[in-house]
Length: 63
Image (cartoon, rainbow, N blue to C red):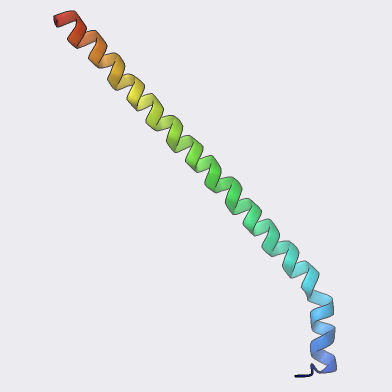
């Protein structure tokens, strides 16, 4: 299938800018995703530490 002159010029003009935008979008998504995962893990760790601390102070004191 042959491309017309207009289509060829379109792809020559817009292939690099579209690729750059898609690459930047994927990079941004990955940064936001991994930041969110890290924050969730930190929050879970803090909650677990609080529960452990609460258990140690209340159960070891009473036991």
